[in-house]
Length: 169
Length: 169
DNA sequence: TATTCTTACTTGACTGAGCAAGTAATAATG
DNA sequence: CATTATTACTTGCTCAGTCAAGTAAGAATA
Image 1 (cartoon, rainbow over the protein chains, first blue to last red):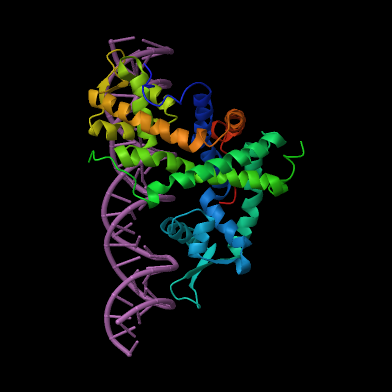
Image 2: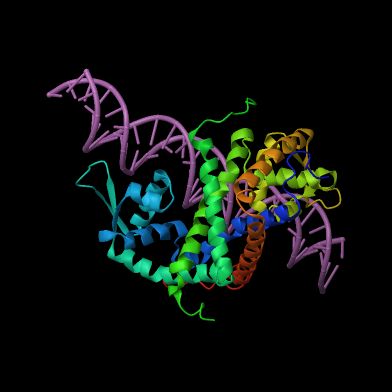
């Protein structure tokens, strides 16, 4: 028994493509995290924070800007920065130009950590994503990803606009 | 291969491809969950459990088999089933053929829920993943996903084989 | 200048997931 | 048949993430 009574777009090749992507969505994030966690007890997200700071002028960014780079909510970022601050890799200070803003700066130890972690992470990305693909496929992956991104942004009217909600409450 | 040699591969087109995928990995799961959560207070994972049961003979599966279908640890599944059991959509019973095994069965209400949720979820997948792509790209996505899956499975020696801990403790 | 936004976080309560340590039932072994 | 091992979960602990409710500083307005 299958449930294709309604929009039966999800079968055949479409279903195959979706299932293949779904498996990647399920396993790739954990696989990308694993070496970083194992070697440095650092999640991909925390690494991303350190990396963004390392690239910033003065190794310093305001929390909101950093949240943008990390694709993160401010609250998630705030907790993550607290964690890596506790490990001595970043330091927070009040922005002298705007007392509401908090600046996060990479410490010496934090810079050293990024420099150790970056090759590990690059190698993981290469091994899991780039190397298995042909040059053509790498281009296809970019195009496909951009189209999906675009669709997500359009769909995100469910966030901004209040579309018709079911009254099954 | 030149790829495995240097970590400096993450630049130019490679970096672009990776960054595009990384953004999708970050946003797509939440975007796929959103309509299900909004309309039915059901995560994609919980929906997957109900869907798997709906397709099973007698709408019943043992927990271990179900965990396989859901790509899930037994512990995660156990809690998820507890949740949806609490909402009256599944029922657990002891397997009469093997007292260690727990059988999860879909209730009438559970079946009704799957039948309501499935078109919503199909539509979301279609809107976010399939429709934005050309037919050719859907094929490319499948091939690319399969290659990445394969690479993950190879890399997964970190799970099965000795997790040699770092000596920087 | 005082009052009312608005911005930029931070934090408390709660939920879901992982790991490890149970528990109970079955299988294997002597 | 008693003992030991294995299987199939379940659960306690801990932690990361979300949402909503603070808090504090700067901006806008009267």
